[in-house]
Amino acid sequence: MIGLPELPQRVSIREVGPRDGLQNEDVILSTADKLRLLDALGATGLTQIEVGSFVKPQNVPQMADTPEVFARLQRRPGVIYSAIAPNVVGAQRAVEAGADAVMVFLSASESHNRSNVNMSVEQSLVAVANMAAVVREAGKPFDAVLSVVFGCPFEGHVAIERVLELCERLLNLGAGQLTFGDTTGMAYPTLVQQVVLAFRQRFPRQPLRLHLHSARGAGLANILAALQVGITEFDSSIGGIGGCPFAPGAPGNLCTEDLTHMLHEMGIATGLDLPALMECARMLETMLGHEVPGQTIKAGICKHLTG
Image 1 (cartoon, one colour):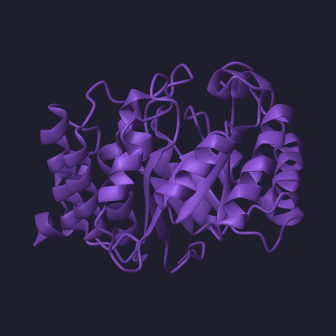
Image 2: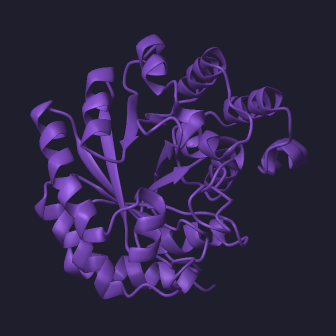
């Protein structure tokens, strides 16, 4: 019998639906509905939930009430409630609101960075340095998200060396963890492995998280490829909602319950209650008034079908 690649025994999932999912929806949920969703997600075993972002309301009106959400949030012990900040003002607001962790972001390509935050990459790095100072002074973790690592919708291929150079600069600014974003779903399994292995060779002890999309149907295949090279931390969105509103062709966040189902079928632990996640996805459908992209709530759990 041919031996299978050794895979991790356990995976950690950070839920990004309340931020990265809802920001791409036409329907703007009420604060009360967001709090209901966050409470339900917190009961599934998740230990990391991205609550919202501190951006200008005119740019992302879906996130306008993030300070109120944090103020009214019923926190569950052991859950890290994080937020995204695009600049130093956003970082200050996130800290004041009580975010447990603050994530800053920039793009691996100039064009996407200008589309996303209206700054050059060099300008963003200056902003990141200022944000890092604010977050560290507050005693909060400072994590960095690097977008369009696997391809830019404006420029196409992104050189791995460019990615690694930006990683080094972010780490020198004090980033505790890096997240690689497949912002427009341009990744494919061998590319995922090439990028991860290059990162591991350059930074062998540095934690790395992947934020993969399924815009072109390769999301779960890319997860498997990442597992095969030792990645154990991933982002996903309940129901598979969301994407990037500042890049063309960027729908398709990886679906939390679909990812969890696949991992459980493979014998990989997540600590998550899959039926509870499915109930969250159904709740979200009711709130949004339309079906969500996730497939497990439609097809069911395999072991339930086979008895």
